[in-house]
Each structure stands twice: as structure tokens, then as C-alpha cells.
Length: 119
Image (cartoon, rainbow, N blue to C red; front, side):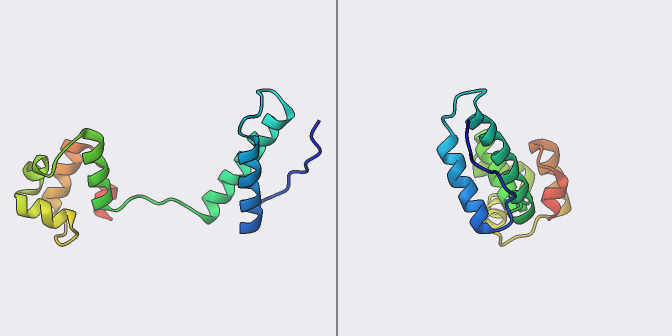
């Protein structure tokens, strides 16, 4: 039986300590007290991270680059959606804002969520 007392994660120090403890428990045997402790700590860390370290939606450029990587697309593959090679380069460099027709094409053909493209 383990004698560790699990407590709420209220501070960054608590968070860091919980991460260290999780690391030490990663090889715990299934259905053991250590595995139970690992599960509870993971839930507490997840809740703390949601509140204090939220991960928001990516920006439009990040979403486009992610989709390109996922689908193995090159910049050339974006020309039909963004209009020209120059537009592709400028959009990806953050120098040209997406137009509504560009956003519609990226959403329709690449499946990038419209709300991400609007941000």
C-alpha cells in the first residue's frame, strides 16, 4: 500500500511536483495502488492545465500549415485555393490576409474549420 496523500494542485509548484510524481509512476503495474495514484494525478494535472495553461485554437496560418503537413501538400498545392503562387507565399508569411473566397476554398477543399480561418 502506498502512503502518499494526493492533494489538489493549486500552484505551479504543486503542478511541477505532480508532474514529477507522474513521471515516477509511469511504469506502474496495472491495477496497483501506484497505477491508481497515477490515474488520479493525471486527472488533477489535466484539470489544472485546462484552467491555467489552456491550449487555444491555432491561427489560420498554423492551421493551414498543419493541414499541409497532414496531407503531404506543398505550397504549389494551395494555388487553386489562394489564387496564385505569390498569394500562397504571402499568406503563409502572414503578409496577406485571407479573403472570404480563400477561406471558403480552404474550408471546403481542405476541411479546415471555418472558425479557425476567421481568427
